[in-house]
Image (cartoon, rainbow, N blue to C red; front, side, top):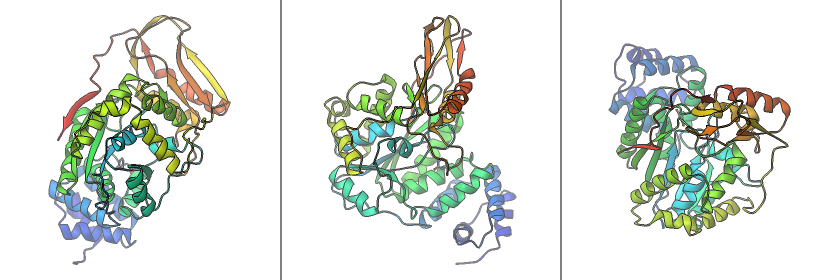
Length: 425
Ligand code: URA
């Protein structure tokens, strides 16, 4: 392969040019090997942030990221594989219900998940609220569980897209996260390397989403759908609303309990609606013709959940830890809730102890909050608005302070967007 100087590659992008396939392969390989310095990659990332990438450049960049590690082969399974990825939201516990549901419909769901960072939660942190549950499985264990149970939720192994791990850590500290080519190549390289045949993306937009602007979220969804399909993974996306939190519970163990309610046929209607919409997309991509709602209501999905938890060392019947401090926040006056801000609520859960500021930080399994009201509700003075759960008083006060901007009383009731805003194929 031809050799380049890193400065030459940086200049090319800085001046608005396209990176050639050879340049892309070389710079990513050399960066992973330590031959391109962190400051050089930082400059290149900033140049990509401002200049963007054309579609074939992005396809090459993504392919090079996939090739930096292993690509799992799940083609030998007896069931069709289909996975889901969410760009992250507040109270987003959908994977916990959706993955067993889709497995109950006959697909195999290899859900390789991450941990939460900032105000949005991570699926692994939620599952780890179940004592004994193991996030780390070998590739063989993962394959066996997919064959026997039909679903696995686990941590992505170190061998999967190692270029992304290094690049993501660098983007985090160089203000280069919010770039559509960099986000889409990061997410899609991991999903393509995991070996799923089909993929449904839940791209969230609104106040609590990573892409709050709807136009940008649409562009991200379309870019990722194109990347998936170009790499042989049948991919579609739903654009969903994250202006208000999903469901009532926000926080790891609290979200597990709410997910179990939905798996048992109850729970909040928005969680149920979004889960069913994503499940319909997933089974359609997997080529399975089935009534997904029936599989949720007849207990099949809950049975698969119990099998999945047990297969990974957890006891599906065990009670979860309850936080020692529980405090209710009440309305200070009568009024109509005109705004319920998911970003403030996500920040509150994080400060109560449910999230982390740095990836090394621990999270509390029991901390978080319940959102007891919705936009448009009339509330009276003294009526409970939030129920806060924390392990100590410092976290409780910190989390409570973040809620000061969470609710607006009176003013104009906003026109609400639907939960499922659009389907992008
Ligand atoms: N999640 C990822 O995996 N990568 C990004 O760049 C952003 C969100």
